[in-house]
Image (tube, rainbow, N blue to C red; front, side, top):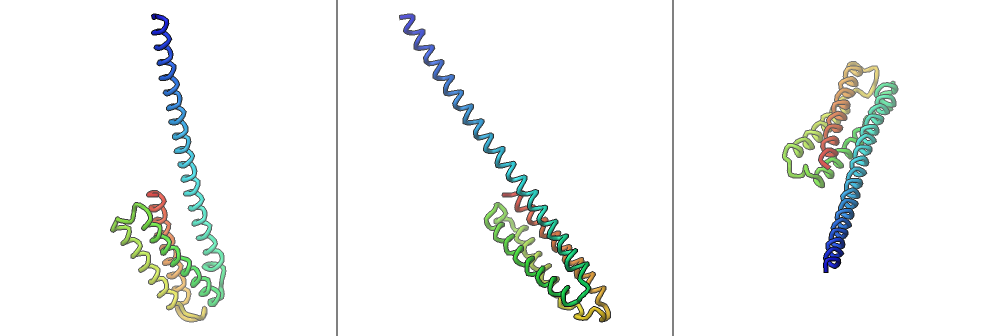
Length: 165
């Protein structure tokens, strides 16, 4: 009888230990999955920032500072404004799908980005078509500054969405 009780207790302890080991394996697997997800999130954030920075640099190199031809500059600026408009639409779509959907201040941020974009379009339209025209350099500098500010505001909004996802 004692042997039977001893065997039963030993078997129960063994089963509990096995269950505990399995739970530890599951916990470890969950932790590993969580760590992997965090690593992917961090690397994606870094890659996004790199793309944003490279896009800004490309814009500055190809149109804002190298193009002396007013027509080429205007075409490049117009294309950049179209890209920004698409970026704003994507931000709004992403915010609707994220935790930011119910936050009024973020909706106001999207609205401000649209207004900022509209202002940049107006500045581009006011830019003289001829480089030799009076005020061309000043208007171009003002437009470049507005575009840089708009890019920075977009980057901040992207960062907030990324942090909430």
